[in-house]
Length: 405
Ligand code: P1T
Image (cartoon, rainbow, N blue to C red; front, top):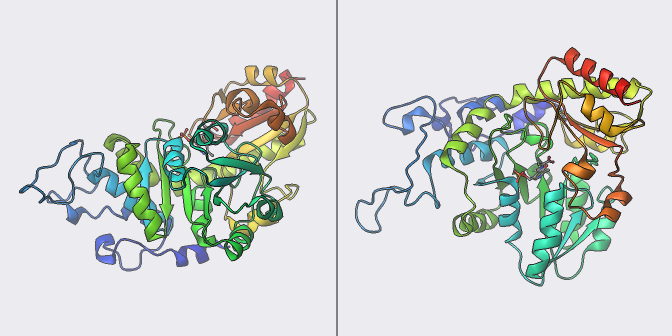
């Protein structure tokens, strides 16, 4: 889909007077203004105020001005949630203390005895939550390769209540056809909640709710905040019933983010479009260089024609982030040790380029046989290509590849 078309379709969720701009439909205009009209505060500050108070004065018992206690609601958090809902073209956004906090709350929508179908390639921590914690609540998960919609349909049981996937996935960058999957599932079982973890692309490159996915989930810790200094998660939906239940769970389970972190993420969203464009440019440049090098076996990038789901990626997203995975022919430990601009570290989506060995660093909690079957081997390296100068990133990769031979 062309970006212009997509932007035309963006509806500004907060009302027009609040946005103070009758024709505001562009991504960055929404990111910079939605939920942030200075007129809503008596001091008219252009940057939303950071409200740290955990207690709010009642005018009389039971009479208050919308806020009671910091866990159930906070004005700085409301600003962020309003902006995120508008950016995603959603209706309700709930933020949580981390991405896994969001996952914990979302999976609390289902109950003991229910069944979950999950993608076989997921962030290791999500896989661990499903296999080690949900199982204790008698929620069983079946893991399938969702690049085939038929696999998902075949895995559905009478008690299946949720489908959970990442697209592109972490770390193999598998792409799932969201429209085909939702249509196939909902035509059979409209009661199943479909959740897409959209962390790798952000709402700038992909909007799962457009494909009638029920919940778009984020680790905001990654690209959305983009500066490697906040842990936070979000769930965004158009459904009133799910929005209401998630708001209840946010308050009751207590997995809330701090107001300070909300202010940081809100600030970061203002540059999301600029950052994502540069992540894509740098990521493609690094991926192309990797592909040309004799010490590289195979490069995984959804915007390369060689990617098995390249057509699906082009159909449902408008670009790709700085996430690139590749299989090295040489010694991966030597390669990682030789890097100078890339930092060896978990996480992704920051200004600083990071490199990781998923089998040890981010996916060690995935059972070894499952990792081997998937191809998360000792030769698989994951890069989060940051915002440094392209030529420095390529030179760094080149010298590390040479050193790993
Ligand atoms: O770290 P946290 O904010 O709790 O988010 C968990 C999470 C959820 N979904 C995806 C796709 C993720 O990549 C993550 C976290 N991932 C890493 C820390 C990592 O290095 O892959």
